[in-house]
Length: 418
Image (tube, rainbow, N blue to C red; front, side, top):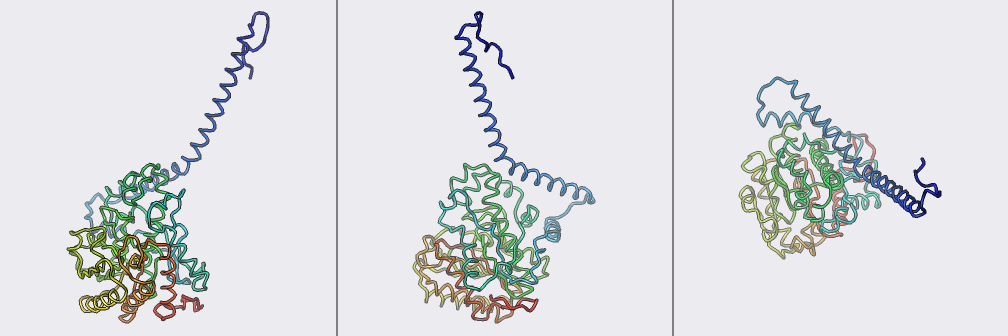
């Protein structure tokens, strides 16, 4: 390419030559800067564009399928059943695996922002690594769940709530990490909400595995502050409620007990199952900490309030009494056990003083309660705000294995520890 007026002659003053040379250099620099900016934009935007295109295609396909159906009014319960029956969350084949559910996608990590919340968002992977390093779990024996789709989430959640998650400010409020509000939502979807949706898939699948094998542990999940229409407390999706609704339809059961032993009240599932006689809720929590949800407390079937400072012996004594009452009040076909470790002494949010050995004994008591009655049990790990939580959970699972409360034989007959 030639640049006019760059030839120096007697008609062309030297200062014009210098001016055009500067202009040419500036133009080239600007062009290179624009190219770099464009490349950077494309690099950042491509995943988002692909994600949105996939969602648009899925929505178009769903709407096309729906429009092909007779134009009859479908009531909410029929639509819920339809969504559950068409879901793929029960599809992963676990026949040759141990009913321990985990995906590497569970762990949340992005530029260190996750460290601004006291929750250890890498604890799920650390639990599995502890178990594998000590020979209690093989990587190939772990069940890898699917991500819960929008249609799956609509089984419990409202359209309005799911749409609100397209605003990063709302996600920042739910996760209690303010800088999330400044991130583009496509990035929040990938780095924060996608891991949560994968854990939801794990909790839903755990019910099926528990019914097949007697027990199942989702190494993640337990988002008990989230209800169908509202999230909070680092809980964006109501995995416990979704798990139970799927079980009602796909597993043909009608009685479920939630044993919620996280230090915080499980106000999410309490709001979702208020006055639902198919669900019995035993919630043992510290009333002096978040969420102070007095409305949800009215829906707890069996309320056990353990005050700040409650220590191991007193805690376990109250648990023994609570389980005895629950066993006489309700005969469930499935137990969902929310096994938060924020009851540990030193946890910055739980306010209780239960030792690591006390947490291990607590889990053993709940599993023994279920196994003695031949009731399938699902365990989710829920809250826990100390780095030591992962070690305690791993030790608890090892203890359950050593006590014979979780089987070590896979259907194929091959022996695997855990």
